[in-house]
Length: 249
Image (cartoon, rainbow, N blue to C red):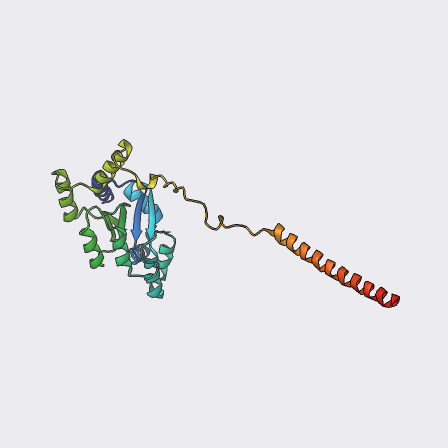
């Protein structure tokens, strides 16, 4: 059973590798139901997942999943501890949190560019059915205390056939085409855009204002002091002359 299970996993994994560019380390997004099933089945995810997928893996989750597990209380305390040990991937629900299933679905939008695996139990039919409608998203679950990589969904197979017939272009091919165009200089990479040169502007109008001449102000104040002194001297000399005239008279 173990050999056949690994053969199926190798076959399904090869399908996603060849058609959607899935590469190691495999990033596996866990929700609360998957963590709870692993806890009940006494499955060591960090040890058994790399063996099952025959490659390096990264266990990931989101803040929305952690918040959901916290609200569910003591019954899922063990599942919360498992999720807290995973790497946290940033989602778009920082201000307004959503349910764990909605959050994981948002992480695989637009063709699943980060090649996430979604790990959730089949009991959550809402999440599993929506994941199967998105081409190129591997789905994992636990059944009879064993990890299973689900076979490609009919939507995924139809997408691959459309790509092979030339009706569609896969996300992996779009990325490779974009990189080739950038290397040939046909498409400008927005990250490599040169900074716009600042236009040479005229002088600052404030700098054109005439500066107040402090030297003239000091000269004028000094001249006024000299005038006052002359007036005082003139007054004193006039008083002296008047006193002499009176004395002579």
